[in-house]
Length: 377
Ligand SMILES: CC(=O)N[C@@H](CCC[C@H](N)C(=O)O)C(=O)O
Image (cartoon, rainbow, N blue to C red; front, side):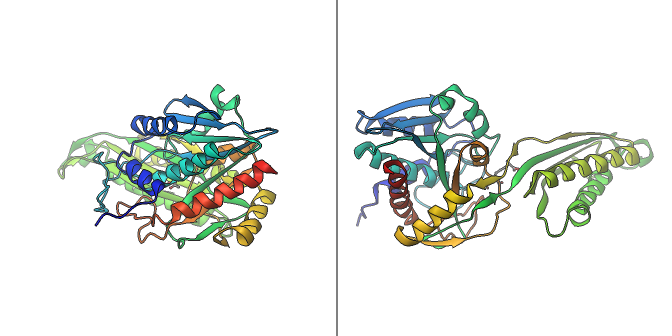
């Protein structure tokens, strides 16, 4: 027996098959452009920027531009869901819901392409959210600046929330982030000659432990901050003293002050390791995202409206220590982001994340009505 899928669930599944990493979303961009070409064209204007897409749906009597943003990229994760629409790209997976985000954006866009409203609507398909960050360069592009919206909205799937629930808060929703890469360089040698080498196993593991003192000893306990080392690479063989160590991680804070303080402590501890172990060190901060700070009054208005007129249950949530480069847009343009409940037993970035697709029509309906309210006044 074949079941008839909701059209945007089908689209989500097609996108799920072709995850691509940041700024390599070539098939994804092609998929979106092909889809757009099948919509009524009379009110659509389409531009590309790198692997992203910008779509304007022209209003009937526009006075402003209402924006909606989705991200596009997948992650370097080997999928283990076992679904029949599993990733066709080995080692790459939509494990952060960007396939759902895009399907929802296309659903909303389709509605307005067929039923225009008074104001212009701008849909941003933004690449590279997972890194190195597409929001900031997209904002700086001529393509964006010439169509800059007056307000901007977005959602992120929330595996911890049931379908039919949305969660958000006025003010900070997502943390400041900074990647962290530290290289230590000592001297390789024979395992039996420690006095003639300079062992980076000892220096690197000392540093890994010392870094964990920063949050517990230097940050106000009532503030929130994280320093996670996700990868440490030292050595090649059990009887070789390795002269290189690489520590890779991420820092999360709810204020720029804490971020600066943590970076300053990292610099000091790394200097201490250089001095104490007579090695050389190099720190690279990688990609940095600013916090997602929801506009307080727009967010409150949305939460009250959704609770009364939406088809959803609305929760006021706590801040998340995840990062999102949507924060760069909200630094300049009023708007908000919210969690869309998708009730997955496995969380974001997990190889078995399995969002409940019933959330897709819920989000399309909710945001179509919210954007209509914004655009028709
Ligand atoms: C929603 C989500 O999971 N976002 C990512 C953003 C990555 C930021 C950056 N590459 C880093 O690792 O610091 C997250 O890991 O929170």
